[in-house]
Length: 610
Image (cartoon, rainbow, N blue to C red):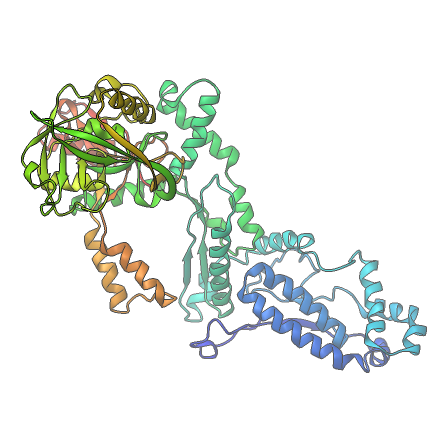
């Protein structure tokens, strides 16, 4: 295949199509027959050919699979209109020992026109009666039928063979030595966003494959060595969830079988279920270099992850802290903001009385989650709200808590028009309340276990599921005559993207990456034009994401994934640790810090977010 010069495509990468074919001239004995057959057909055929070529050009921009189909259709059109036999010419890189092409050997005619002559002779009477193009096509139809080609083109009959030939011919290798350095053109590299190793193809995959494949093929046609690097992701939450379901069906849990056995089961599951997604990507025609395919849990990639963590920690960009996180009770792990989906759901708004200590007066409060009352540490009102100004500074009694008292505070965060204008503050289970609690130095009470059940801080509701506790607590409050009313209320409910359960905000010790510095640099890059987002209107989404950005919680309470490269030192536990690339380096750093050579080191149980 020939190429095009850089200047031919400068500024117009999306409008250029190179469509080249090898033409095989008919034998001399067929020329006279061919002239008679095509006298009037050429005019119609040329128009049809140009139409098909335009269709092919458009299809090329819409995806490689459609492009290949268009190539075959256009080849047929050229063959019919010109009398020439056409074989397709693909990528310019052809190994010396090329495998058998699915449509015949490159450079050799697939069908000799002597066969066409025989077909023409068999329809000579019809051709003589009418030189109409439609009837003359019957000759070609007979040829096709004699070779098993009937009806319209069916890609499924050919594309698998075509792709196998591409791979066997090493068409997708960058071949930098002959294709790049010698002609002075820079390599073009595309890393594939790794799909989940045990996943299945969806529209998101189809979109990125179409876009990246067009880019890869376009730059190959320009003569550049192209590396489209494929790989798959270990999919920490999704894969572990499936294996845990298997264990539950067998009547056991990951905790019962232990970490080592559980990880063996996950690798077994990966071996059984993995590979479907890459086969589907091949079926799309993805021209990736599969000889370089990678998996995120490969040993060298795991080492790279540890290296990145250590370097970020050395720069002060990774730290361990106790903050509000999104907790998935079914998965028993923290999840990122990106893994939380909000849905509008019909719920209830519960109105009840917060009795003022030492008085018959009460402060009316509304909540959507009565079970969190047991974690309240204040009631907040607006400083300008005349209804409650006189109560600021006083104390109220937490319902069903055996007389625990909390203060009434004032903050302009409170919306006087919503509910009753008085807001219960639960710093341990609400992100907004957490911020107010930090501002007013309120205590934080965690009332839930990691599985979403109530803990000992919930008093008599200890051990109940959070939703069962909601019903029981409200019933008990009704019996104490401290409820006011319940009314329907539509609310945004946060749900786990993976497990589907309602997310529980809670304060937990996790590992975080500082994001404000990186976020500001990303914002500036777009503002200065160093990065251009297409279409332009998505600049707003970029700015919204990065303007009000929180530190990224990167630790996950899972077993499948890259284990956090942190070792806790002996009796000091979480209060003293070393960050290292491996066990040996961890012990070396511990001894350098003054600990004995045989000090106990315990690696963090958590893994990193994928």
